[in-house]
Length: 595
Image (cartoon, rainbow, N blue to C red):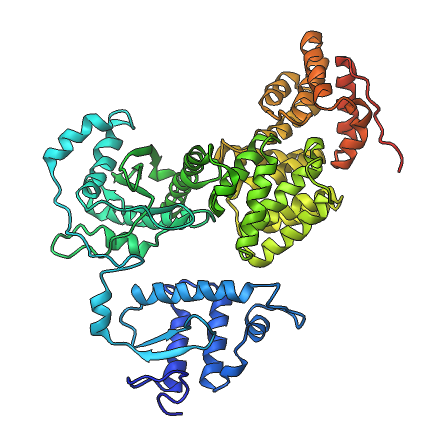
């Protein structure tokens, strides 16, 4: 087939042959720099081959779904937008690749908006070079910064309260260069964005400088695991900050947040300083210093551990970014919130176990998925909201339908839209748990952790499920790991720690854990404390907690055995709690009523 015979739109330029395109496609699909999932690589291969073969009339969402996404013949593109969603991601991956690693490739493949038919062109490198100074935001590149020791002397006192002196003298130095650039505007994105400026090598041994560059890559990689955060890729990071002043700075981007820092290594120890700043105001938000012994772990393992610690502190649910966002939107009405802000509001509700914001969060999330039917996180969050409505007595009064089956449908839709979404598996796991498919629930959580191994919500929920079944040797390491990685996690997960201590007779430790369970609108925190005070013989405090239980649910003494059976508590735990409550002064039945 000759050049230009298969391209759907006219072009004055010569166009590559079918053989040239196929040979180039094989190279492109093998390149790690082409940031596309395996299924999107199948997507691209399919539409390219169909276009080359002249079968453009067959390139529809239906045929793509069957060929690339393993959908069955009953696939309906009107109800399942998977192809449209992945087409958008594939176009972004192609655009990013040709602006970065692929900017000198001889051929370019595109999938123009409006169809799924591929186009192929030879690259005009003169034209590409003219565009090479812009990625994501086509603005004029700024002049490289002039580093000034005089300004550094002025900055030291201003940063003194942020970290140790070492953190200031190294990580702060990096921020000087940023201040001397033209002001960076906030990114015009639905979710918060972060730019990781290459960390500075503050060590005296040039042979160790590779540690610094490797850590920057690791931190970027770990940050990308958090679904709510837009992370500028390493290509952008390393082109924004050019230390060689003979070369122009590659790009200027518009992040909401800027993470910078430094690494000092002397061969046996490594010290990392990190500072997070507001991308608009330059205000310092967070700082940390991490020191590790290089002799106790391999370098790769050490880089990964440090990067994970930095990324988790910043981007995890209830981390620095979440708390900042929650504070900003706390006073806004639900109707005015955009998608990401709705998710922040939902997570604040989920962490607090408070029902007072249920209606506002529900309205916000329902509006979100109505306006964006492809927003997987919206479906997952709404599913979790309805799970909560089912499992809390106050919450059930907010809905007139079966919230659990609605949650099951929403969770399934969330996973179909995004098979890597941790909250989708969390919602599915909880739904199955309350449908009494305990094994299916545990397997759903495990599938989610296999895809998102650092997700602390999945860790904690799986740990709690195992605790309710009295499987302590599995439960407690999960709970401990979740709180170590994410101290801001919901206080309700301390219930697992309480149960373990209570069931082993360590009532002092049980009480410490029970006090941490802050659930103002549901009974379980008060129940844990009442049972423990009963076992300790502290009748005054026991009476106070019983009053709290009955204030939340006046009929709870009658409902106790059925409630715990509905939540799949191990029978030995039910008996032990009933004993503690009886000693506290609340007589409850030990066995659920027969159905």
